Amino acid sequence: MNCETALIKIPEVLKMDTSVRDAIAILFESDRKTLPVVDENDVYQGLFGGHQVLEKLLPQSFTMVGGLPDASFMHDKPSDLVPHLDKILDKPIADFVDRDGPVAKCSTPLVETLLLLYKHRTIVPVVNEEGKLLGQVSVWSVLSEIMKYK
Amino acid sequence: MTAHGGVAENLSHVVFGWDPMTVATVVLVLTYGVIVTEKINRAIVAMLGAGLMILLGVLNQDAAIRGIDFNTLALLTGMMVIVSITRRSGVFQFLAIWAAKRVKARPRHLLWVLALVTAVASALLDNVTTVMLIVPVTLLITEELEVSAYPFLFTQIFASNVGGTATLIGDPPNILIGSAVGLSFNDFVMNVGAISFAILAVMLFLFDLIWGRRMTATDTAKNRVMGFSERDAITDKKLLKKSLLVLALVLFGFVVGHSYHQEPGTVALFGAALLMLLDNFHRDPEEQSHNVHETFGHVEWITIFFFIGLFVLVYGVEHTGLLSLLSKDLLVLTGGDLTITALAVLWSSAVFSAIVDNIPFVATMIPLIKSMAPEFGGAQGLMPLWWALSLGACLGGNGSLVGASANLMVAGFAERAGQRIKFLKFMALAFPLMLITVAIAHVYLYYRYLS
Image 1 (cartoon, each protein chain N blue to C red):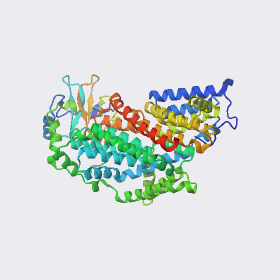
Image 2 (cartoon, each protein chain N blue to C red):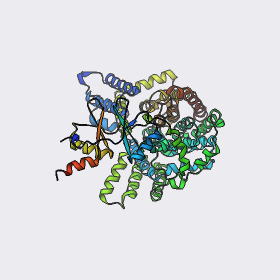
Image 3 (cartoon, one colour):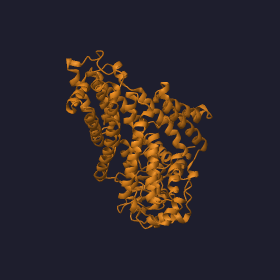
Image 4 (tube, rainbow over the protein chains, first blue to last red):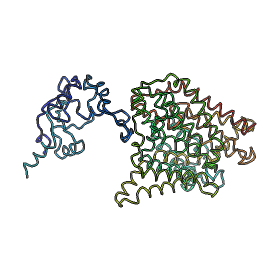
């Protein structure tokens, strides 16, 4: 059994030139934490979601490797964070796509798919041999597939 | 370097009957050559070089182990453990924020106080650890102030190396020299402490001329920094108290230990064990194992194994008599004059340390200087040379980005924060400034020990 059995359609796909402002609106509307991003040929490029937005809201000193471990000494109000958000809202999401996330192919074994979901705590996009996005697997799509054999 | 100078016993059975001195020299030069290229991790190269010294028969394994200075290793490891536990309390963030607020977050004054905090911390801890803890806070403060981080990072590189010069534990060259020669914490404070902070004062004046005077920040930006709560930076008050208590005891041990024949390595390692006890005794065994494992994970094993490899390598060439031969050549060049020799050691150490890693250089210079003792009236006569080596190697580290490990650490942080420090741009200013610091040390050495 491989991950193709748990493959589901993706409700929304983001394009590389979508602005951060529009992408946030789509994420809100579709009630998703993260969505796959494709280029003009539908080739999968990575994921974009709330995590990438949060990263840009925080000072870089916290998010870089070896950065500060906690921010308990900062008491910024929401209005203090607006300038950080303003800096990125009109930029294309291409600048912020997470390209290091997990990707599966239809032939990826089911247990390997489970491990990817467990390690990365997000959806796993599924691509074909040319890298084109076919769909995704999620914790729930895999679990519902397993439950059929109960 | 070790208590086993000279060729008292035959430790060599070199393969194919090759000349031990030639083999040792080739292995040393090859090893240092590869280290300089920075293509392969320096710990791997040093260990391979040390292994070759044994496999080719320059040393046997017993001799190689005798060449390792365990006092230095214990001092380094002990301090790394103490710092890795102390940092969890948030004390370093506290210090930087406290200092920033004392000067009302004015960038010009911030440049001075953060440099001072860095210098003092580098004197009491090691300078690599210091910059690792201070630089992220500096990047945050400069980001909030909307000012360039470059002048601050540049200043902190200098402050860490100059501050580290002041004490036995501040910079690896001093740890090597102190351990090999038997110099105490107090010896370093008395002989290079004051001059280090005098040099820092001159540097701060120059940094103020170059950058400080022109630095400004808006009131809104300054208010953001003033809004930081240094008290909230302390994330574990109990741990802070335990850490400061042990740190104070260890520093006290360094100061008085020499009189009671206690080496700094013992003091540091005992302090580390005591702090680990205080940090763990209330935890269940499983949690203790996890916590101790994590603490040991913060020890910089690359540095420790690099030192082990170097000790064996240098003991190998020392044992074959190469270094005493070189010291004789150096004495011929300087005419056996102490003043010329000391100043030659100072300037050559500074220039070499700016170009290559100062640790292998100092490790090689120690037995070389030791073998000059008969020429200068015994061990006591060598003292000006040790201070020249310490000042040259530590201050020389400022000359380029590769001059000291702390510099590379700062550069790494800067790159990750998108504020890359360019090698040549840094060197164009750092090298002349380094020469000024060495010139000050030159005058100091001359009037204090040589005139």
